[in-house]
Image (cartoon, rainbow, N blue to C red; front, side, top):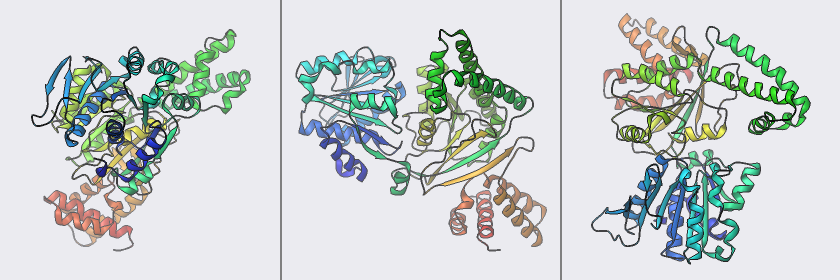
Amino acid sequence: MEKKLYKWQKECLDLWQSNGCRGMVQAVTGSGKTLLALAAADRLLKNVNPDLKVKIVVPTSALMLQWSRSIKEFLTKSQEGSEICRTGSLLKEDAGISSQRCRIGLRGGGYKDPAECQYMIYVINSARYELARQILTELKQGEAVFLIADECHHYDSSENSLIFEFLPFIEPYRANYFTLGLSATLPSGQSRQFLTSALGRRIYSYGMAEASKLGTVCRYDVFHIRLSFQGEERLEYEELTDKMTLLYSTLVNAHPLLRKMDIKEQFDLLRNLCSSKDIKIAEAASAYMKLSYKRKSLVCLASDRISCAWDLVQRLDEHEKILIFGERIRQAEKLYRLLQERYPGRVGRYHSEMGDQANRNTLERFQTGQIRILIACRAMDEGVDVPDASIGIILSGTAARRQRIQRLGRILRISKGKDRASLYYLHIEETSEDVCFLPDGKENTVIELGYDSGWRRFFNPVYDEAATKVLENLADAGAGEDKLREAEYCLKLGIVRADWKRGPDYAEGQIRRAKGTRERNYWVCVKRLGMMLGGEV
């Protein structure tokens, strides 16, 4: 199986092995972290102990099920054999494959398989209170244990770190204990130090730029779409900001270190100050936190977001699968109802209030193509694998770089017939959202767009000028009203797609492959745009 690994995965495995089969790997989402981990387990099984116990910790039940499918596929292709353990019963997967060694057990999300299965996958909520005891018991019994911590940046909190409670007691058994931490965005500071003590140092980093260049993830385009507050939203935002500024001055005077902290550190300190014995400081910190949450909600729920997403979806290719990411469930539900009216039976939603089974059903329908548009709130940020999804829309989000990278990663997996992916990042001008996501991939494109909710249109000065010239040239050439309306419609679609950045030669190839009149007309307009932008008439 190692012959099928990417070069970076082979290099990473060698470094991991030379580091005593311990360490953390930071690699862009979609580049093959799961396969890397399974190849590492395969090395240990072959070279160290054929009865190795593999323990995998994940943050969500959806990711647990995805790991289960990946293990089954890996074992089948490796001809190692696979038997799946479900609530204590063993179900044979493939009649011609040995099932004596390799079994998969799940703990969490309603699954309670016996812990002695060779491959055990735990949702962190279940792992907190049982994994440490199980690992220590197996090590004392002479077993070899391989702990894979997927999305390991989650496991430094006081609750989640309970999975590492066995560490002070394993020195006599350390030769049989192996680790691998996986994340697209490893933390820094104290969080990094803790994870290093638990899993080993970072041994490899594989970023977006390199992954794009080497083709291990899909090439992509990022659109920054500027929105505006409507009605009283701007006034309310400014009033909240003024109040927060006054409170912040009071807090900084008492704790000057606040100025030197990043956002996360500031809010950690402010939470502690809410319980300060100094009543004035405690009240100021508490009021600041409440105002901050209120301002964030105002930005997150700004009315332009729904209308922009609605107009954007209607302009995208009707064959593309779309993931829409939001922060608030009521916002997601509102957009779901609007899109469901426009595309009945083709839209789904995925969030915590839906319940595990309903979410699993929705995700399965999205994966199989029964629905084309999926609206999610945070629950889809990590680990969910939908390779053929090519469009991501961030309806609302946080300023956290980790979240933006994770959401981009949901649409970057390579899939047959998938040429490129597009991420649309909606943000309100002149707010704390001003710092947009700028990916580091040089092979990719970043396009700035504005959105006018009054006119329900998108705009870009360069595109708009070229589009106007295309229409003028058509009119000068004697095109009738029907042809001009058709061209205007196609150009309205083109502004939210990156096709006009590809050049006239690319458009010419698409014209030859077009399957219908509307599609051909679209690419003819894109070609004319490309010629205009390239200095040709």
